[in-house]
Image (cartoon, rainbow, N blue to C red; front, side):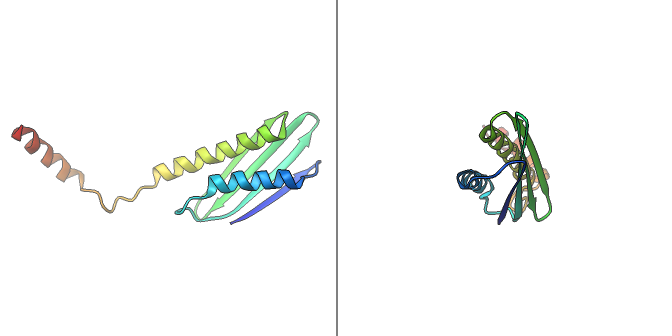
Length: 116
């Protein structure tokens, strides 16, 4: 996975890059997701610190934007939004191969209650 960190109107220190990469790797470290790249854009406008994160998967694209007065809070908020989107994707995509068909489950339930 490739993480691209860029900025507008500010410079990015090595410590800030390391923190962003560490947090993104913790969130994006999923065995079944095929993540191709992640882009982080840091921007400063007067008192506002804006962070935009874009994560590209094989068939999906996730975007998050956060804006606060402190850069580290913006980063945490944007990464939290990406984490929420990925959790929703993982919950939606299920493996239905090993489950019983619904009609078999419905016919088994009355038989079990009759034995009791």
